[in-house]
Image: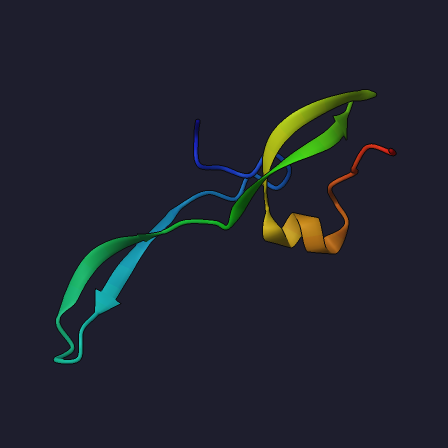
Length: 64
């Protein structure tokens, strides 16, 4: 599974982690992905989407 949102295509980005002594080490910032059932092209599919897409309403959930 690619660590990427199915809707907005948000993925991991690299950056630095700073210790108390201000020493920098490389690290990866990953998006907060959640497994959800979505309506994609009229069918219910399971996809990994980020929490921002869930909160903004871009993810169309199937009706119960």
